[in-house]
Length: 270
Image 1 (tube, rainbow, N blue to C red):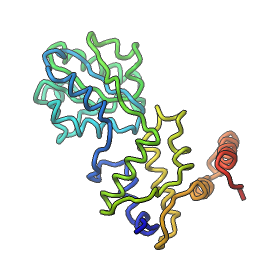
Image 2: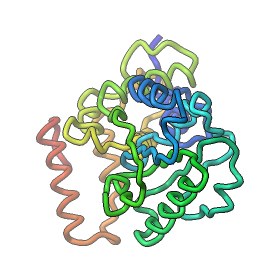
Image 3: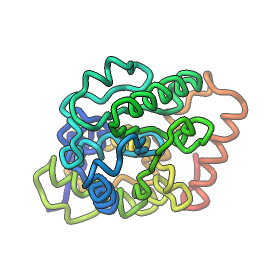
Image 4: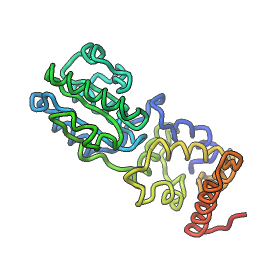
């Protein structure tokens, strides 16, 4: 039996969720897991080291540590320290040889980032501990992370490309609907737009899944075989656009974007 529009419409908030509120099964990142587990086999080799996981916002870094944390000795049942709120006493209050810190990214102003990273450096120097620090590409700036005498990066963090997204959607459909996914529920051309080859390195689960969840609201809740198409996505984009809060430049960009979709994937705008 095909997966129907009504099934996907009802389950969309879970299938397309980017929140940790749902117990979604982790998918892929085999190379990343193998790399970090191998490096953390002997913590004595990582004393006073800041180990960075640096990738764009919304790409699944925190979810990744949730999965591998037990093997690394990170207690993810407790929330990680949030960089901008962390203090010396917070770090001293954590057990074990690892300090786990999240949100070292552009959401925090530069001065605070520097101050907090310096504080972490001092803690590592005094205690001999290791820090796992999660953030965006700010953590690749030597002016910022140069405060650490010893620093390393997770080298392999698989980007969100088309095969990755397809696998995620298939796994979630089967998990939340309890049925075998025997056909694609998203049009191939829409996959090409959502995770184009050119944007794979910066594509965000948060952005892509949120977009799909909003698009799915336009699906007619009937018993027909589900296929979320470029045309449905175009309708969502046009209905979501509010010229009253946009500049002329934004309007121009939006219109160019719609024309691009039409030219590349067929169909005409009304």
